[in-house]
Length: 263
Image 1: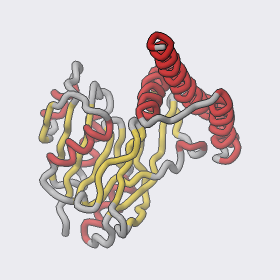
Image 2: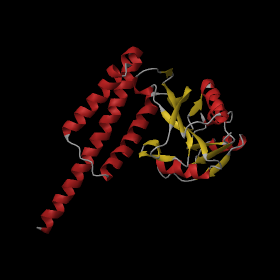
Image 3: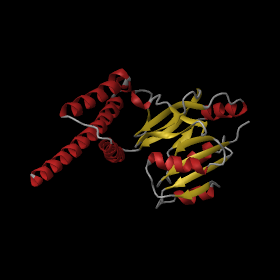
Image 4: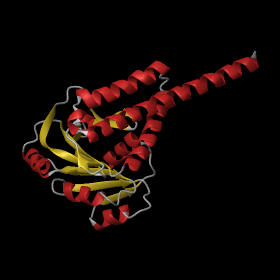
């Protein structure tokens, strides 16, 4: 039976981190929290619940999660965000896996709560995530802020019943802040990689994001809230590419200015 380390990164998560820790303690053998210098009661709550707590200034989502991964005692790890928790069905599934570990990693659905409502459509469900794995076979990768576990070639991945429960946002204002923050991070990462962005790209990426969420992913079945989620996700997409286009144009203008001066 493998022993499992629970791993969480956090910053000012006093509202949800308690339920996150309590749900994980049902299945893990130790729990590590890496906190990015919270100014609320996050660290106090963690200490009261007996976790191993580290403080580390934020390195970036991928970098912070890999830092936390290194602090785990056991090679089999379960990773959640501080605003997530395990459903009862998922707890039961993980306990079964501990008795019969067959794959290198396991993924499961994530159910998102948006402004007080659990959603079953749009990109917010099933929103599959690989969060239980052997760290010798995989680590965090992807592109900030969209981190994901990247497994080594040839690794086997299974699927478990049950959901990660994710409190995505409690208000439109909160989600708008998230959109602004995430779109800036994503645009900056794309800019560093030299990604180009035409006005047409801004348009079709935004349009497709809405169409995919509302029609392909059946957001229409969620009624008004499905429209809101589809629109907000399209707006996030628009912000990312609009910011990227602005960065590219500013860079090109600087180059042109330097070239004219040298000429």
